[in-house]
Length: 211
Image (cartoon, rainbow, N blue to C red; front, side, top):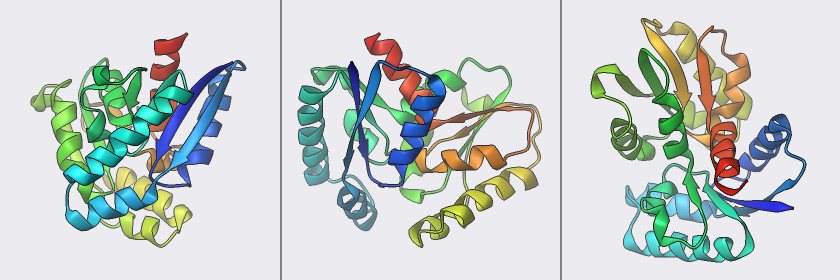
């Protein structure tokens, strides 16, 4: 039985990743979940991932690498700590990096959506490493994060879907929901475009790394 560890900053992401694994239909894989919400809170208060936060996340990732065959950092804010995944003893996958790599294979423009302002700069920088700026748009959904902070996941996902519905699609090749917490909105999005979500895409990348 292969084990993939998931480092979360939100407990609600556990169900999203379990559902994504079931959809991928790999019977010989199990998930190990670690939730460190206080580290995201500290990063949000500081406006950045401080050296102390980076050290704490690195220590946690080292421990998870001892317990699993691969590790996914499901939080885009904390994912910057895994900028060089080669420093870890097992494959460490950033959700946003997996999404950027997958999105780069689509033709046309790529619309990347975020809901947390703290992830915007890092997400933009990362996607620009995979996709030319001329066909990349990274946007913040302005009111969605307030719903998330209130624990209103239905309102959160509805706000994401409304933003996409009201936005002109132009010549898009795909839409990327850059944060794991956004994945639940995918089923509410009425579009013929591919909608890439963090749980499914990063799990697929982890499976490819270990199987």
